[in-house]
Image (cartoon, rainbow, N blue to C red; front, side, top):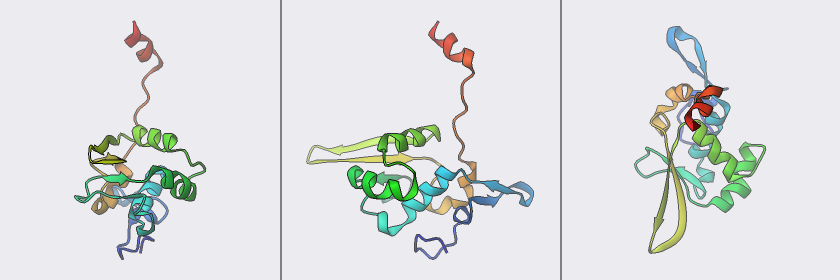
Length: 140
């Protein structure tokens, strides 16, 4: 069972492999594997957790997330680096604020990243780099 304590065996947690076409093992990107573990771990729920509808995850305490959670999973504690990685893997970002509450929450969503979609984590890929000439051509 996954350390998330939900009693469900998550394929992505067993070394980052999932069954692909023809029974071949498809690798889950290390960042995606760690992110899934972070969100599924009940001990991190005060900082990062699934949204109520479980279609996204919410970072609700950025300071604690940087100080306690990021260093436990990555070699850094910078929210900006973490956020850039999410962007690299095509996660949608939505900032949630309320005029009645001064707290700030960061909500991120990817259609393949949900609690029940652990067998599809290997399908989440980095953005394709644009060819060197594409950037120059776009600026012209």
